[in-house]
Amino acid sequence: MPAEDNDETNDTAPEGITAVDEVPVLKAEIAVLKDRALRAYAEAENIRKRADRDRADDRLYAISNFARSLLPVSDNFDRAMAAITPEARAKLDDTMKPIIEGVDAIARQLQAALESHGVKPIRAEGQRFDPNLHQAIAEVPAEGRAPGTVVNVVQGGYTIGERLLRPAMVTIAKAGAAPSSSNGAGSDEARGGRFDSSV
Image (cartoon, rainbow, N blue to C red; front, side):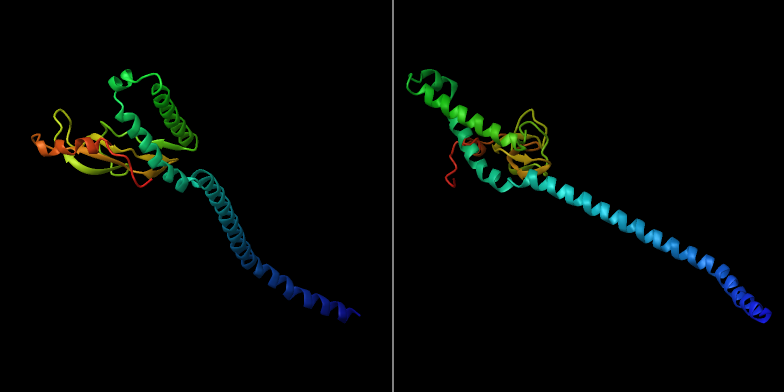
């Protein structure tokens, strides 16, 4: 029996030494597994945040195509109202005044509906030309205006949320040019004197 006891102690001694030798290896494995777990957690958090952001974007930008299709309607309301000068409006008879007021009210209601869904007009006239918001269609002489300043808005631009829905089509002040009669010829058309027939 004492021999058996000696065998047992001899068997356990090498195991104890091996376990002590394995401690650094196990610590390294734990560190690797902990690093993997932290990376997996961080990746899962990033995926969750991206999904939340995508859902918010989907809610905000889902109507982009629909809103873009309504912009020509808004343009034509604006052109219709711009075509009636204050003098002409004062001369209207009692049957026409309510019609003009109704058209004006519809135009304001459409604009309010667009704005309630995050669609906002770009304020361009008198601003410095910004290629991120404006599309220049011509350079025109403009006395008293700095070169590159928006002189006239041909077609209004709009943003939706933080994105550009449609750039504002503008004419900008030319540097050091004298006024010429050829630029005045298209000015009525540039100010929106025509209705958009594509609607």
